[in-house]
Image (cartoon, rainbow, N blue to C red; front, side, top):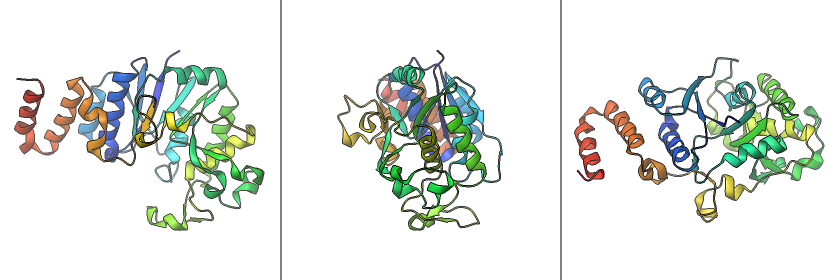
Length: 288
């Protein structure tokens, strides 16, 4: 089985993504390829990524007018990734242990998911239950996280992804809850009638419930929670979305200096005055 890990990011998540790549090299070297879906990377960032082993740069086309909005691109990736086992994880993640068993799990059970920690009701607009023809009995179900999800292409989950993609193209992932309207970046303001509308995640969860009434959720504390919630010796995947850059482990602790050098070159490219300073730092790190 060829193990492909998908992630997507723009320049704002570049350093976090390098951290993800470093953690894969260190803790899960059985991953064959890392597909990087370009959401707006600079030329020098692409140059760095293309020089890293296992990394394959993928383009997201302009498949709709709102392709960049409200995580429309994520549903595109799930539908169009060219492999039998599709596994996506957010760029703000750190792999702490080998994750090859996730691919085996998907092969056996058709999908891999973890919980988000809240229920369906708070992220689902009232009208969506009838629109998707889903019983309101699912309001209390724990939400499946879209930030760490995988499925087998040759399974019922392909229908889930196809349906989610169609609903996204129709714009049902667009908008924000009133409490989060400050996040709106489009000229049109769409307010969704729920506590915390979660765009792609809301669509995906409703689509899953159409075919799987009681989806199984793997332990979110092991596969995607902040490190403060569980012992790091047990945790398999860490989500660092809320952490500051200096707290991202594998930028500073990954033992292959090649990755750190690329980060240095990145900053040296933007701030040439720092080039000598960074060179001196590496001499210190290497004991020269």
